[in-house]
Length: 252
Image 1: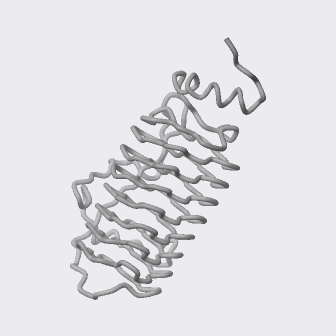
Image 2: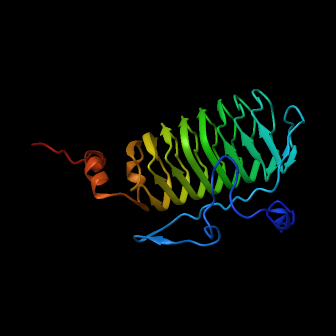
Image 3: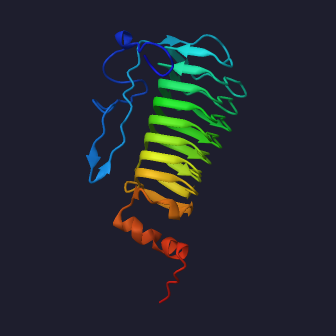
């Protein structure tokens, strides 16, 4: 029985990979590995069943979407507050100002989604892959992300304030001015990811791996990095900020 109250549909799942050319790691879910002293994030294992093309037009509040493929649909300015997406693929969909507050995405893949001002406050993403997204001003404050991979793409002004992230991997993407204020990050990895003007104010961290970040630029909350791991090179780059935080002047 899953968290959503349904029996897990294992009988109709395929073995192997998902849509959009993404491949799930074998045996990754359900266990953790220790990499160089850091507990690695558990990655999702998304195995989509044969999907049915969505022909229902617009989204609906509290809608129940199961085993569907949304292909290049335009959901701009629509409301799917409280909706549930299970075993779904969203390919190239427009999400401008789409209201997905408290929506749930379970065992799903979002590929090439784009939009500005998407509302995902208090949403829940579990066993989800987000691939090559182009998003701006995404509101995800209070959201819960568990076993999520964000791979490729660019997200500007991502608001994760007060969110809970557990077993989340940002991989090969660009995050411009992300807000992790008051968020709780557990086993979160940044791999080949650009972090620009990140805000970690009042964040809590446990096994957060920043060593693989392609760029690490912290605007606020550098004092909240306890529980994170950085590389020696990153330490040198962040040294002036650390010194300023404890009131030390560095002069030649």
